[in-house]
Length: 289
Image 1: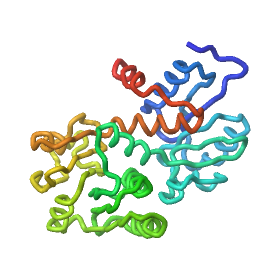
Image 2: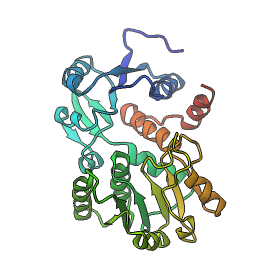
Image 3: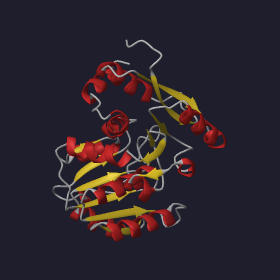
């Protein structure tokens, strides 16, 4: 263990609640593994205390910090600059302290796209179908467009309060990238079936199938997937959702959201330190906890 010294820097997580987070395990293991004199802590901070907390962290010259609910949007008021992905999404989960200048990033989409590559799936220039328009879905959509997808079909409830946000995101991404983003109603099953048949990847970015509702499946019929369509479910509790189980039984490549979780943390670590998190070591370490 690296001892705390007079030179030890701090990184951390701001949110409420935060006691369940595995981020301290990931980052502190990585700091120690690479000999970086830094400690990662969790701070239970809501929106009402966020301004004062950020000012305090800046005064303490922290390396950087993460944001979780409910602070991912509120933090925008206190930042000096945004990365392209954070600007499109309008939400930040990682802040870099660059010599007193606070720069906001969103690493969720980067984490997802890296998990796709880890599975050996190439989707650049291809089509993706995405279910959901919440925070994770918008991050995935933005990063996929920035990474060169040709077309993204986004399915959501027509009554969703997030619909104006995804419409704004789609317009912004189409203005600045070559990606087409087409919005569809969840109730239009014929369109869903057609989009799936054209897609290299189908992504469930909703909570359907998450514990305790493990019998639920976001797709009415797994046979609607195209011949070569891979399946991603950002849920990792349960480890294998009904969607993933059915997809694997149908011979499809399928994976959950755990690698996305690890890689979004790894991207934050890289932003702060300039070094690569030892992800496979971290994965093995977390499995023992």
